[in-house]
Length: 263
Ligand SMILES: C[S@@+](CC[C@H](N)C(=O)[O-])C[C@H]1O[C@@H](n2cnc3c(N)ncnc32)[C@H](O)[C@@H]1O
Image 1 (spheres, rainbow, N blue to C red):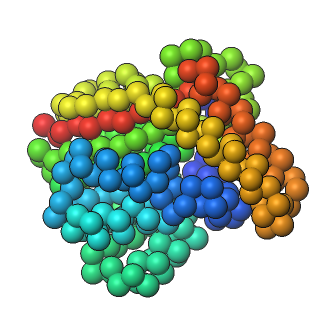
Image 2: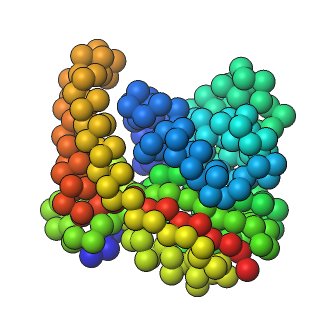
């Protein structure tokens, strides 16, 4: 069942401008996706990002952008909708002296401030789940990619066991997700939009074990989280991460990886 909620890009941006952005960094580090640097390295190797011009859609704090610039000599354009994320990303990039390799632009993934057919690689990590219209998102990713260029991303998606409406209400609200794709849903969207899909992975086991780890970490960091954000936010975070962990253990939610070539 593909649930649909009316969370808007403003809801997401307001959350990332505030405690949500900070809390995710406390839990995950400045690569705000499952698996941190290791996963950035893995996706980079699969896509062959060395010396390329790469667009990171939903670039957040720019941790992956800086990693790619330093380790693969990639030139990165990051697009994100949240002011605080862009300010932090820009400041940290300057601190590391990487401003000649990385540029950040404010923009919506559904209307990218990027010219058509300009990018060697279009990249995304665990963020496209926030975007309201996945068809339009894929169309935008394809539009800005050069012919023969690659589109590679990971994302949080629905698993093979159905979620009840009640479970979905809570899980989507906690994460502010308007809807979620499936492994095959993204594959079909890519295929229907001039792409050859080269690789698809369902990362169920890895997703579940990372959620167990994040659940333990929330509990370990209880005092710090309460001190910084208050008791109420800690309770919400603990309950939310636990619900996602439980759903992942039952195969109701998962994470996937897709690599495609623009034809
Ligand atoms: C989980 S973080 C992304 C993490 C980042 N990809 C990384 O690996 O470090 C989600 C980010 O997506 C951004 N975002 C959500 N919806 C967006 C949209 N429609 N357009 C642009 N950015 C968006 C948020 O502002 C936030 O910074």
